[in-house]
Image (cartoon, rainbow, N blue to C red; front, top):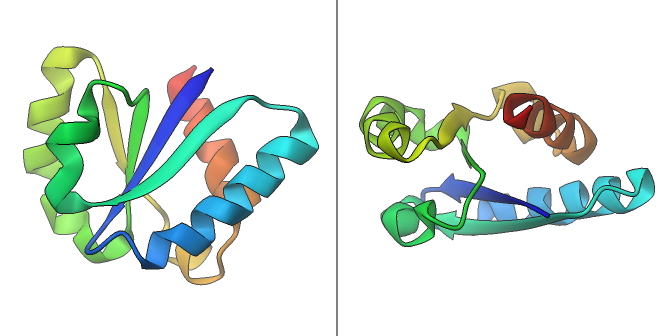
Length: 101
């Protein structure tokens, strides 16, 4: 099972997107664990995550977080602002799965 972690400013706005991603995964029959955390908890969730997706509001953290994740072979990516704003869980899930290939 793949572990996807979404990070945003407080972990609140991404929780709705997480639910939409879980619904999309269930429809596709894909087994994934998806959760939302505040960016302050990035390090606590790094080891368990296969990929970490950042909300557009914290994309300024990308360089620093990638530097922490790379030595562990983990990927960090920013969720597209339009997909995030429109809560396109299916699209965000697809992009995450592609990045983990």
